[in-house]
Length: 291
Image (cartoon, rainbow, N blue to C red; front, side, top):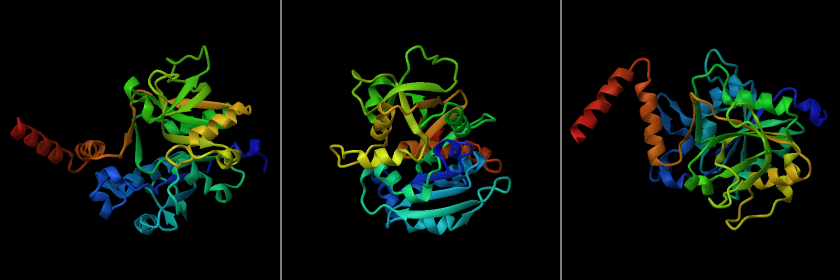
């Protein structure tokens, strides 16, 4: 199968879920952060629904030896909801923690020559829109003949050093909400050097050609392989890259610390169709007693 023909459908997704979750200790001594409950479902339950809704049929979890619970929960086949298709689940153990790029590189043989999605296992993408961000990304990837397509959100300038930051092509319409062709991408720039405030938001669609660049990438000062560095090398060799911005009614919920975990859980609890009113009442009572 040629790379171009492989872009007609994106049916595979890689879910990195091997991180240690140190900012959520001691809770993550008992549970992987990707299985922490957000309302009635674990974090990864939302991710799997998102993938199934975007046409994904096969999911590869990149896990660590310390997280057997993920395989125990999802097994070889997982049904996200009655209205969604069953997902086939596979697993690879990341024996060394060498970053996101290293985790994705482990998927080379599983992906073959097919384009694939990447969904961070500790991040929920909420939407009230009919077309989801991942669906828009796949469309942009196919019609833009992209080698790498990412989801982006605008972050405060003082936080750009925490993310991969994209540089739109000169003249790009940043107000339309349409996918944006990229001129560059930079890993964790200083505020002074950042080409924009548009940060990678935990979702990618990538061609199989990315594996060549991941294997060529050098370790950074933390001993990690960065996906953004590999995408940048690919762009410099002529590969096209696009970004789909988060729109109104969409949000990234990164379950990376207690603040974001508590916030996501409260949102889910007060939105619950059966117990939402009770949860909202409890929240108001707690706020009243705190005042």
